[in-house]
Amino acid sequence: MAIDKRKIPEINAGSMADISFLLLIFFLVSTTMNTDTGIQRVLPPWVENITGEAPPIKERNLMQVKVNQFDQIQVQGKLVNLSQVKDMAKEFILNLGNSDELPEKEMTQIDLIGQYPVSAGVISLQNDRGTSYDMYIRVQNELTKAFNEIRDNVARQYFGASFNELDEDKRKAVQAAVPSKISEAEPKNIGGN
Amino acid sequence: MAVIRKKGNKEVPPISTASLPDVIFMILFFFMTTTSMKETELRVHFQLPEATEVQKLEKKNLVSYIYIGQPTAQLQAKFGTAPRIQLNDTYRTPEDILDFVASERDNLSEADRSSMSVCIKADKYTRMGIITDVKQELRKANALKVTYAASKSLGYY
Image 1 (tube, rainbow over the protein chains, first blue to last red):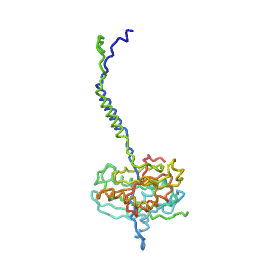
Image 2: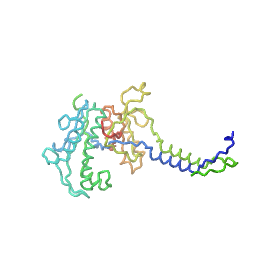
Image 3: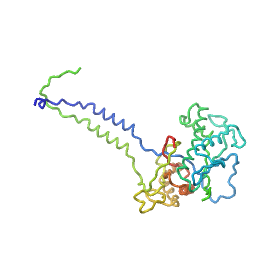
Image 4: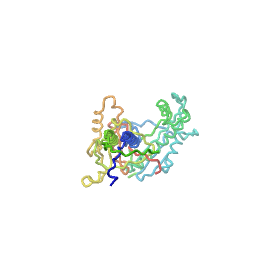
């Protein structure tokens, strides 16, 4: 047939390199290396045979969060839902009304911010051996969220940007103004089991 | 528009292979970037809990991992279903954590030792008992920087 005798025109391969680079860049951008993420905490140092009393913390400066083996949450002696924990923690740390029952604040000189009333409040988280890890992480998450939101507010108020957008020095200043005081209490069996 | 050329009796030119190296390099780079080296073989199964306020783990060479969860399906016949602690490649008890932390710390350079951190990768269905034991041992070993591994969620649980 006539068609078989025709010569095949050359395929221009000059743009192949461009296409391959395009693909390479596409894959480079779209693939995510699975990075590990998590909630960071600093454990209290180990104390051998606790002698005497622990350094006293005024009751008003302590917010007790307990989670029992049924994953029920108790904040300051009241049974609460997980969704309430964050707001209670924020209310506790901020103490906007300068109430006598919420933590005291101490005026502290902080670089870049100046005088700032730093809350003396400590959130103590206690869990039972039977608490599920999932619930523990959720509570930790809510408490972290409370601190992050307060830091964000402070960052916006003083530097006009959210906490994550700040540079290292400003971030340190905000961290000094709102220290993340979450203490993981010595393990106890709460709620009995 | 298209110019109609006269079909002559030209020889078929060979398809250029000049771009073949590019293609090969592309594939090479692709695999280089996507494969992550597996340091340890997982012997426990875990499903990480979800959280919204997670932070990325930085300086991975300073991080040691502790895995907690049920033995994987193949190993359950032998080891049962009680949650286990995996350090390096084997099941260990909480008491071994002191040695584990000491050896991990020895592997780091002098300057990095203070910034060593431990990442606890635990299954969300484990109970806190075993994790509390691990935490107590970490405190004894003076490895106080701890990350509870959690996957990022958008927060609608």
